[in-house]
Image (cartoon, rainbow, N blue to C red; front, top):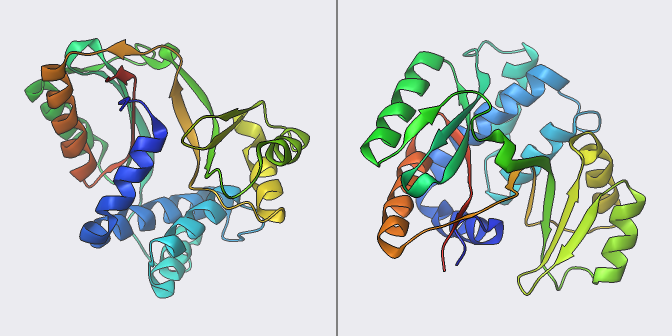
Length: 240
């Protein structure tokens, strides 16, 4: 398994969802609130919010929870003020990390991340230190049995996608960040269900790691996933 492989991450996340529903709901609520605050509460006019609401439905998050999170973002209900922060870091073996955080306390979030990386042979890095090793783009993962490659290419490329990559695991559609909404609309209109749809940091170069380093990286990913403020983790390790 390649550690940077998005399909592997999606499968792993689905496997742990049932045991961590409270955690999943909390993260989704924060993201939904921020999305509604920045882009409004109308699903049709806010692609990020629409994507998150779809994620919430797939996770069986109660409709009332979703509605409250949206209303907190639009100001219809009082709520904690959250903000998005992106941190760059190095893990063991020189692996590059980008960690997306949604927090009500940036100092706490930075301190927690610094401690976690330090304890696992890594460190937080300055802005731009690792970002150049990733492509910031819209990314959609689609199971092979959902749509044929030729049909997917027709839908995606017509909507402004840059590339469609098909492997044994499934289809991956990539697009410019600004084309994300249009591509998402096109896939939805064609009834193409996605396994994952997000603005991602996709590694352009990978770092091969030894088995003992892979174990440490696995533990580091687990701990980062358990932090309340962490929403997404992207890294560029290559594990055979």
